Length: 174
Image 1 (cartoon, rainbow, N blue to C red):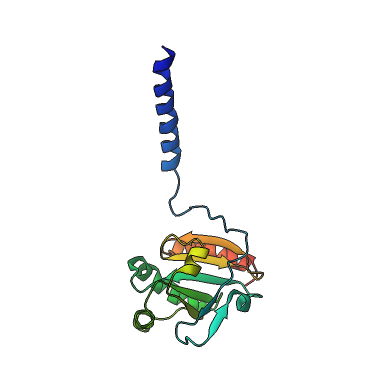
Image 2: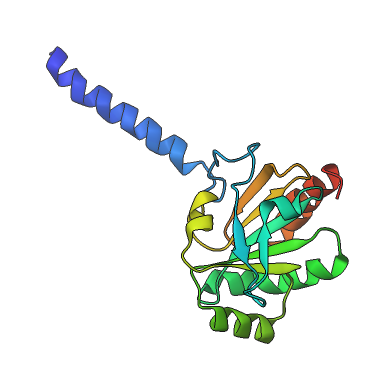
């Protein structure tokens, strides 16, 4: 009799885990990097390969890092919103062009607009991996001391910008 109960108990536990998992928002994958220093990097600027930009260069200001690529369909969804948001001058937005060809990326920005203070070229994807990027687009808010305070997976929406990103940026003193 006890042997028959073991599979039933295992089944009930598994159903419980499934039920909890289905209630979670897939865009809210917890990142182990939240409240930790942004990974060190030194990358070429997309539009000027001879210029290097490092995480140290960005210390002292709140900034947004948006991971994007010209081959990314979802990036096209958020891009017009980023272009409009950049015009407000609320916070500098830096792009991390992820696993892309430089010419394709430059052409994409010329066609759709450039919201980035600077866009950095991560052609091999190493910096993206250091940031824990699952896929593009992903957006990070980084404080004045270089600590990651927020990670958003997927396209930034007007609601995410209004309800999450802008209040956090203001709280951090941008």
